[in-house]
Image (cartoon, rainbow, N blue to C red; front, side):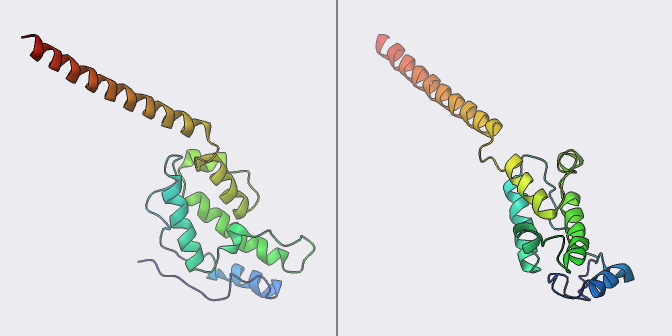
Length: 161
């Protein structure tokens, strides 16, 4: 079974860089985790995937890696932050299909992966999603018209006889 190991405060990058990086290299990271979601992001299930990841990272007090700007490269905590961010970066990729992950492979941070996935797959400002919704609406209108025509024709035939 999956167990979460929390040997150090990996959500806080204000700890000394050498301590955190030492913890990373000593084998306590990456910690063994249960899968975040049983359904990987495939391009059509963004809302489900994003909510599962968001709730998971908030529950682990790790959501700052998805939402906050990284520290400046000159900050003493940058190296430790970068090491932890790389692990989250990898976790996000593991929760995607190979095709989706390959489109986000060149993002530099977990936050960038998160943001790009939202832009590409959320349906907000998504031309493909707009087109699909428009096609569904047209189909629905045609089906309603056909039903009305069928009922009207049936009524006409019944009155004719």
